[in-house]
Structures are given as structure tokens and as C-alpha cells.
Image (cartoon, rainbow, N blue to C red; front, side):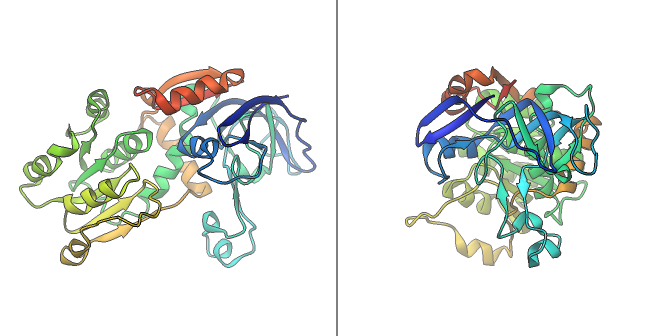
Length: 335
């Protein structure tokens, strides 16, 4: 069967690989696979993996062989939870399996789902309605991580104010989740077309970064917002998040920020404003369940975020779009 395989830094191949050996696991025939920044970083060699590695952790498919327990039944359409955990360590026993030190992620630590079929434990499968559009379904995994992030926000209450810095896929999903919770949300992005999309998805207003401070001041009567979401992953946007936050606010760092020896942050404001920093990671099974419910009930719109679709055989073209097309949001592969 075919698979999108990283053979080394910047070496992507659509190769023939052996079919999965299920043992007691379920076998899922892939339908649609989403690509994201993690996949691009693996391809670039920024995230170390053992080569060759089959990519893919945003996975929608259909069960073609049930596992040991027989659930979900054969023919069931499913979302695959891509996280693996040991189930025995302190974190797993404390309901923090997404932080398991012995855990793994499909497509990074073990072979993933950018292929025709995968074998996974039945516990990783979540039932998905047959009539939910495939393009939108490919965003459910990342929506699950956004749902998980929102659960960390104690101040996400109706009538409060929020700002989302960075309106890529995650930023637009977090914006919608905050709106669904009853918050008034401003967006910050350099992209004009993303500003227009964010307003259609419920933003009160959207401004470029250089106008954010004055716009937020006007939006909040000079008090700053109650919640700031940083969804870019740079030191500069982290600093801006701190500056836009009001006294007693929460700052949610969704973008992954690596070390920077020359980083300059307004650290005194953390103390002066008594800010709470939230730094969520990954998602739990129940976050994906909630994501499916929100999407299928129409509370969060996923289809407008899907922009590019390719066949599995066109994986190279898909990554070119993901990395270089300024109008790319969610890029997917299909079998």
C-alpha cells in the first residue's frame, strides 16, 4: 500500500509499505488526512524522528476490521485519537495521559496515518457521523486540541472580552470556541483575507498587529482584554499577548515557542497585572468527543477553514501548498 514517508530532512517520498499487522487492534481504512505545522517541521528536520517515518496524525477513516472488543463495529466511520500512552505511570493514573512520559504521537514517534490503512487500539477510535463532510472532518483532531486548551481558561465566561493573536487554523478555531462560550472576541492578523474570514466566523473586529494596542484599548475602554490567546508561536507575539492583557487576565499560549537566547519579554507586566499564563498541550479523548459534538451541532464551523485537497499520491504538492501558499489554511490528503 502507498504511504507518505519522510526518508530524511526534506526527503518526502510516496512509497510502498507493508500493510499493517493488526494483532488485536482495529484496522482503519483512511479517508482523509490533515497536514499541519508538526508534519512540516518533521519534513524539515526540525523535529527529530527515526527514518523512514510515515507521517500523519490528523486522521479520518472507516473501520474495516474490528479489534479484540469488536467496538466500533466494522463499517463505522471514525476519528483517530493519535496519542499513545502507557496507562500505568503517575500522569496516566492522574487523568493526564496526554502528558505520559512514555507516550507517543502517530506520525512522529511511530508511523502515522498518511497511508491507505492503519492498525490502532480500539480505544483510540471515536465514532463520526457518516454524513459529516470529509473536508471538515479532517479538522476535528486540531479542534480537539483547541477544546482542550479552552478547558484551561477559568475566565472564559459570557460577556467577557478576548483577543486572539494569529488567525491560522488553530486561531480561527479558538476564536469560534470563545464566541460559542459567549465572549466578545477581537482578532489580530497581518492577512487581509483572514480578517474577513474571522469576521464571518464571529469576531467583533480584526486588526493588523501594529493597530492591536489602540483597537483593544477602544474595544475595552482602556482596560485590556480578560483573555488573550497567542496562536502564532513567536516571542514577539507572546510579548504582544502580555501587553494586550488587562489586569488579572489570562494569557493562553497555544503557539509552540522554542528557546530563544535573545528573547525580550515584558516580564514585569506579568507581576504588575497579576497575569495567569496557560500553556496547554495536546488533548484527551473527551476533548475529541466534545469537538465532534460541537462540530456536528454546528457550534463551530470547520468547512471554511479547509482550503486545499490532494490525493495521497500528491503529497509533495500538498506540502508545497502548506509551506508556501499564503492562502493555505487546512491542507488535506485523501485516499
